[in-house]
Amino acid sequence: MSAARFGFLPTRSSDWVGWRLLTTNNRDLGRSSTVYPDHEGARLAAQWVQEHVADMRITLVRSSSIGWRWRMLAGDTIVAVASRDYHRRLQAERSAAVMLTLLPRAEPLALGLRS
Image (cartoon, rainbow, N blue to C red):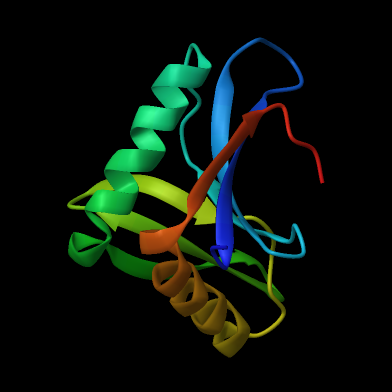
């Protein structure tokens, strides 16, 4: 069994679908920065990110005066974002490192999984 799985979840306000990376305990590490018109679009986007993870770079950004978030970029395009704010920059860096480590072997989950 993989240490991480992709979940696909419709947005609350529409039928558009986004992907997210979940750990074995269903903790949400990161999510797509874009939503897609259907499950297949989200699945293909997650697969593309997974296949190109070696080419990704991480940037850290302030989310508030006391919060940090990471963003994963392919070139200048943001493809994934942190699922939450972190109080310390180091925590955001570690979360991004875990995302990059788990992403290559993540397995897909069914549409609509909620943690």
